[in-house]
Image 1: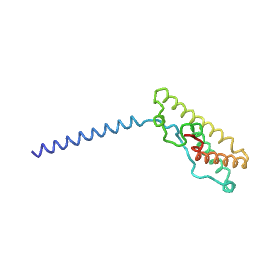
Image 2: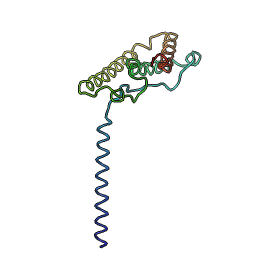
Image 3: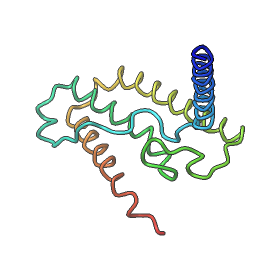
Image 4: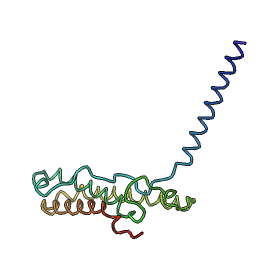
Length: 156
């Protein structure tokens, strides 16, 4: 009797374990939608002109490139979303093979563009005037701040 109970208990736990494993697999398959906005999508801090004036040119170059990365990842997609995590599925766009391929191509093109831009900026930007660099950073930050008010322009 004890052996049957032990065997049935072991069998029960085995069946439950297999059932849960299959549930996890099916969830992964249904949640594999690509995000419309991927990559870096925010900056950690906005700066004043005075703060930027106190930074070295190397620090300014880093800030400039970080802001470009965020802008490249968000601005081309604001008609869809302004934050990460929005997928074709959540927008009601059919997840056809063609639509998925188009999104994958767009993500790859954005990544390639950003990489080539950074390569260029790393070589050429150090020759820029510091005041122009500061003005560009302030402009980019202003643009990024305006994304917080994007929904104000929508009409429902």
